[in-house]
Image (tube, rainbow, N blue to C red; front, side, top):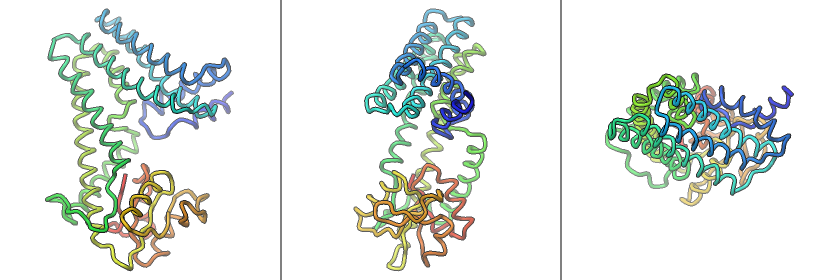
Length: 341
């Protein structure tokens, strides 16, 4: 059974946040094990998760008391465990479907709206409770939009580079990138998601357990504001860096995309559409070395600096922190590295 649970747990998305990966996913693995044996589908788990969130919101509205808050907190936690389990069950049984993906996506947004509304009702105080609830929901949506926009329309290298924002010269961008790397290392060490869905649920559950739904709503709003500011600064710095990097392109430059996955192939399509030639993919996965993806050879990250005399590396991976660190450790100059996601 332990081997089975470990195999199921391996299907969870890594590095979301410590509440999701460290607390909920191990519990979700047990749910998946049972669901697989009794024939429950991923969509059933999604529906049960939504039903529990609805029940929690109802408790918050009609039982605004310490006992009601504890009950709602427990329901919310179980709802999120089931939300983690539905995707794991779909992946480990091969029952992935477009309907299931959409059902899960829309159910998540509905749950967030229900819970924020229930929290505003249970906290009372009229506008003093509804204002932070609305702000928390809006900021979470904005942070999600910025992340999605970054993935789909991230800045790339340009044949005609756009002008960098005022105040984002080469020296200041380099200094800001180093500062961002330091903060990102702390975020990675403690597995913080920066207002990810798991942290949203954790703050809600913690606020209800300690009996402080009102201050918790203001805390959610403040954390959301900080997350949006951080995401915006990151996008500005990465975009300005790529503008400066684009200005260095010439006939001797070899453009290499670090990351041979979907994001890397998307970056290749964007660069090709601009008439830019990519020399190769580079990937940290040793099993990819020597293969060809989209007609390009895949080389190791450690070989980029020695393989090409004047390389420019565009990192197209959500694991850009680790990739950038490995590139710098293998002789790549910081000013020749750009981050696209």
